[in-house]
View 1: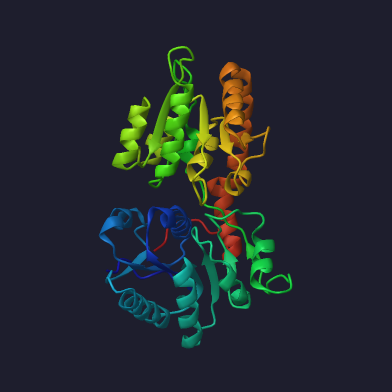
View 2: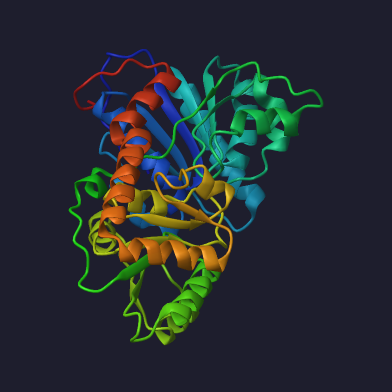
Length: 372
């Protein structure tokens, strides 16, 4: 499927994205990126594998974005063969300024195709949660690294050098950090604390381990004496839903940004439990709402929260209970930590920051006006 009108001659080339399957995690970066580029008149083509499970995301692309869908064959070799044929055709169709490769296989295969095609173009890589950075580090002379949603952000350069080379020498091309943005709806949400103390958590993707840990905490702290309520916001499977409801946890499968923002705004404290990997997107959304956050001390959470300033990092169950109790007992502390968290989220994950970082990484001028 293709969808696009002839593009304006204002620019010298387009941005081509090679994706594979466009999952919710991939779209959390790809959607805002293509939107920002389209609003500045940049022509784009997205080559992706058609998958019925994720077709609901396709209408969310900007109307000017050309979508090239390839069949989702069960045989992975055949699936990628079709995707690469389409990718090669797109590269041959017209001038390309930037190629963005989303995920491990698109990176490896897409870079190979670009080299074999003899096309001189800037290549960018977004791992989208991949932890297999070692083999890719040796390709640092070929790829310009960009957008690290799903891995700890600040140590990326040092980790890349340490894992990919015997000597910790920096890659020949710079590492541009472009973090996935948070929708403006979260920053605009007004805090509206529930009548009784409410601890909230959740996830964008199904994670039974997180649900299990939260249910255990609800049983530990629940009861009429403390008067605490517990809500789960986001995706959950049937087994986890049964476990959460048995622990008297309210379950709200809010799928849109406005629904999540509303549910988060009612909380007193947000808890980010362990058992998760990847970029903690719901934690960042809670910070954007101004909700004080307590998180298990993991590399992903540590990269987002400054302990005692924009939230709390805990290593034990006792520390979690202590921090939650502190926040429940002090409205002033909740306001202080929540406001600091919102300001941090705005500075790092606001749409303006994302847009400026993205265009700087792509070496594109920022222009206003819709794409043709």
